[in-house]
Length: 207
Image (tube, rainbow, N blue to C red):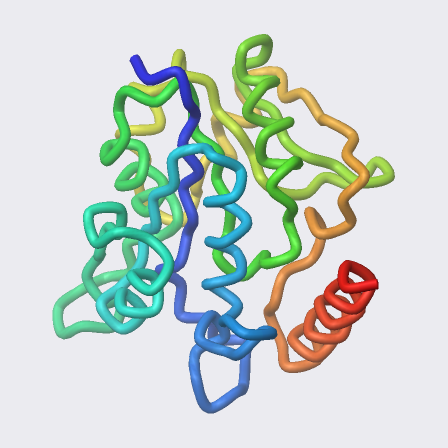
C-alpha cells in the first residue's frame, strides 16, 4: 500500500448552474483556470492526484497533471448515456489508485482549498474512517476516506456519492483555518468573488 493518500478531483459534472459561455472549470483564474488552480493546490500538497473528468475537459486537466492521472468518463448527455453520477466518479478515482492509504474527495470547482488543508485531512485518515475539513464549525471539503473503506468506495454508483458511507461511519470534522473549504464556483457571482479573493491573496503574498 502507498504511504500517501490520493486526492480525487471531481471534474465530470455539467456545471448547469453556471451561465457563462464556457464550462465553469475552464474559466480563467489568475494565470490559470478554476480547475487548474484546484489541481495546483492538490499537487502542492504532495499527495497523489487523480482527476476524474470528461473528454470536454480532459485537455484542461492535462495542462496540470500527467495524462495517466486523468480518468475520462463518458459524456453524461451522450446518446444512450445516462448520468453516471458523483458516486461513479468517486469509484473511478478510487479504482485508479487502489493502493493509496486513503482518498480525499475534492470538487474541481473549489480552487481556494489550500494544500495544508489537504495534508491535514489526509493525516486524520490514520485515526478515522471518514474525516472532513470544516471552517468555523461549517462542514466543507475535502472529505477523506480511509483505506478500510476501499471495497465500498470502489463500487459506488449514481448520484448518491459517498453520503451513505458518511452516514454509516463516524465522521471526524477537522477545524482548519481555511475559509476556502466552503467556497465553490457554481455561479458567475461565485467566480467574481473567487477572482477577487485570489487577487487579494496574490497581492498580499507579493508584499
